[in-house]
Length: 135
Image 1 (tube, rainbow, N blue to C red):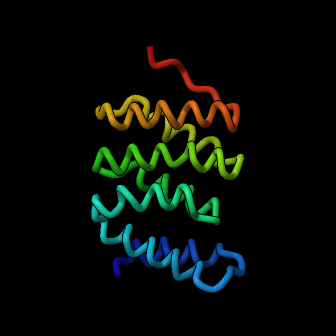
Image 2 (spheres, rainbow, N blue to C red):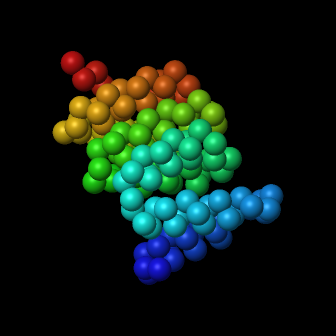
């Protein structure tokens, strides 16, 4: 286990309030998948996190981390995840997430830009955030 991974895991586990049995184990499994950095696994995992994770901050941190991934599909899915989180929780870390979506709107990948446009629409709908037009 790398030092960075242990440090990241420590910050996540120490910020977790008392959780039902199994939730911390789920976080450990997600962290292990992030450490493996298998793009195919992460493509599906990010959707599961955005749609099912009950800890908003944990889910937001996972999406933010993967929004910078080298694989365009992982990046795009992570950015789209912000829209799901906005719908589910009604709040996000505005400055950080807005910037990540704005960067994704200008990504080299058509896939990432399309997912970012969808996320931007969701963020506008559920959080009243504004993004500059891409026209």
